[in-house]
Amino acid sequence: MVGIHRPVRRRRRTAATVVGLCAGTALLALAGCGSGAKAEEGSRGFPEAKQDSASTIKVWVDADRQAAAKAFQKANPDTKIEVVAYDGSANGSNSFRTKMQLFDRAGDGWPDVVFSTQNNDAAWASQKSNGKQAFAAVLDKGLVPADTLSKFTPGSLDPCTVDGQVYCLRNDLAQAVLWYNKKLLDQFGYAVPTTWEEYQALGEKVAKEHPGYIIGTAGDAWTPEVFLWASKCQANDVTGPKSVTVKTDTTECKRAATMLDTLRGNGTVPVVSVFTPEFVKKYAGKVLMMPGPAWYAGAIFNNPQSLNVPAGQLGVAAPLPWKGEDKPVTGNVGGGTWFVSSHSKNLAAAEKFVQFVTTADDYQVNVAPGYPAYAPAAEKWIAKQESSKYFATSLAPVATAASQVWEGWGYGIFSQEAVWAKTMTTAVTGGKSIVELLPTWQQAIENQAKVNGYTVN
Image 1 (tube, rainbow, N blue to C red):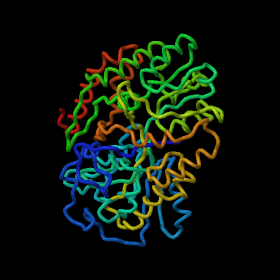
Image 2: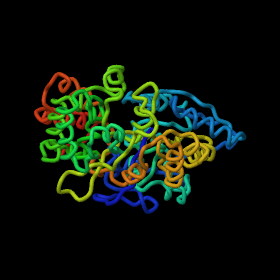
Image 3: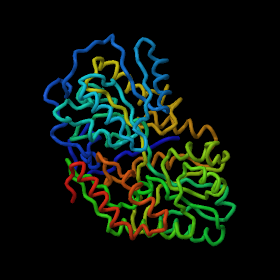
């Protein structure tokens, strides 16, 4: 499994509605959403190149999405495509943006379709750069059928929506849930926690009764997206065009930070990356539970190169609420995006490609490792995963969590993960308190936002 996001449940500070479902908060929210995103010509919202329906389209994908390109080629042998592999802007490399800026300066060379692992690329790709045409084509003004857009999981296109217009299609979703080892919990006589307070109490109990076992990790750059986003910490509330609210001194931020300090201190939530040999060597067979994105199932648990949890042991529970809050919220860690270039000379083929790879069962249900953003495919994908008999419980919480991603954490140009990694990870690994570091984190976010032209509230 590799990813999940959310349908949206309510809206605030909404922009224009996109086919009745996409525009809200977090996405007005996109850092670059300004009037510059609106094209001045072209019936579909952007200046269009002279079209050549026989031309080959160039498609950029990362290693994991090469399967998507192969599935398209198999299903559409008459459509000519050239597949180019690149890193997908993984780990905040920003290669997508950097390469498009080079093509802008050259005035040529743009790919027709690009896949990105990042959720914040629409913030810049929808904007003119130095007077140059925006890279991303507007998709919801006739290029992609409204009926197709309307069937994406509500809210899943938020990262793609700028100033009320859709600039990309979401590949998969990555909302966080609570993964747990049912066999170990039953063996130790522990119940699955139903609140964050119960989660912390369980961690304190595990530290005393079963030292060496863990209930989570806090060593990756997406730690704030798993724990602080789920606590409604307003560290990344992108509220409008080039405007962000950063408040890390709130009760919501401090309660999550305090919990992490406590559990890190007793060893049940170690500051170690799940993608390190150290993690596998030290904790294989000792993970009682782990809050994390949907893609943890395949990337961490059901992976011979990682924890390799046997079939019938891995369970999943819904995101946890804090005591006194009637509805839980959760964070989002990933979920890729597909862009069509506004410079494409074969928009029909480019649109055909992105619609196929995001909606067709041939890829999203039969091949894709992550939870599809396209709702009809997601339903079938869940059924397929459950039929494997690998999981110890129903995957219904994974689908339910898709509607619970908190909208107060936006999708700006700058990377929150990069800020956390640079500012917090080393200090926390060195033993400093996360609570005490909250002002440092705030200042780092503010500085990065201002560098990118944001007004910080």
